[in-house]
Amino acid sequence: MPFVDTGNGKLHYAIDGADDAPVLVLSNSLGTTLDMWLPQMPALVEHFRVLRYDTRGHGQSDVTPGPYSMAQLGGDVVTLLDYLKIPRAHFCGLSMGGMTGIWLGIHQPNRIDRLVLCNTSAAIGVPEMWNARIAQVRQGGMDAVIANVLDRWFTADFLSHAPAQVERVKAMLAKTSIDGYAANCAAVRDMDQRADLGRIASPTLVIGGKHDKSTPPEHGELIARSIPGARYVELNAAHLSNWEVAQAFTHQVRGFLLNASAPQ
Image 1 (cartoon, rainbow, N blue to C red):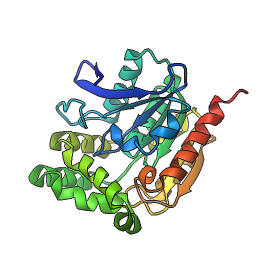
Image 2: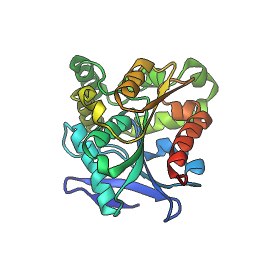
Image 3: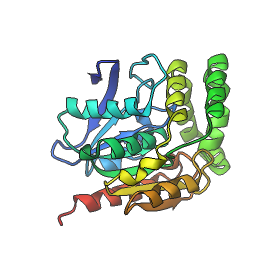
Image 4: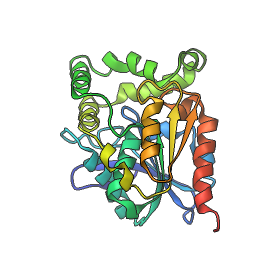
């Protein structure tokens, strides 16, 4: 398994697709791993060199001491691109991955071609909410939050009719490091990027979920209104739209990115 040393912990990554294809970075949500993108991989590797990674504190990446910050998570992506000698890339992130994408669009515009921000927010919740989540996990482990998280991530219909897929996501949550989860909760807690959204110059697609309880549609709509030229698309899904309506999600992402790759 390939790793890159950031100087403050190692990041686990995977890269698939043709060497000469445009690079697309995929960034996972809080409590998942790079495997959260499995529903998209067959279609995306046909057109892109797909770079996935486990966000710091998740999966096989190191769990370094927290709290983390959005600047730290965004800096990890830059370190990974530098290590692989990738000057620019498309970026697609969901939830916390989308928050990382917002940071990159604001602070590292020269590294980002097209940006896809999915089921995400520029500022979410109040500190007390996140502090309570951190305390709950530290006291009861990941099992203390899994049921509530799945209820926010998927609609009741998907929970009842796609048990095998729900179980795969549940397994990722269950295996997440308590310390890593808490440190990333702090990064989301301390983030407010709303004032800087207008600085993003990359062509941007914002994807929302009609039934998303974690980052409701108005969060995505605000992002799209604030980024010059951004487009907003709403899918019939809850928070993990890339699993719940995988085909529609992939269609939107692939179409937006291929439009960038087509000859002008």
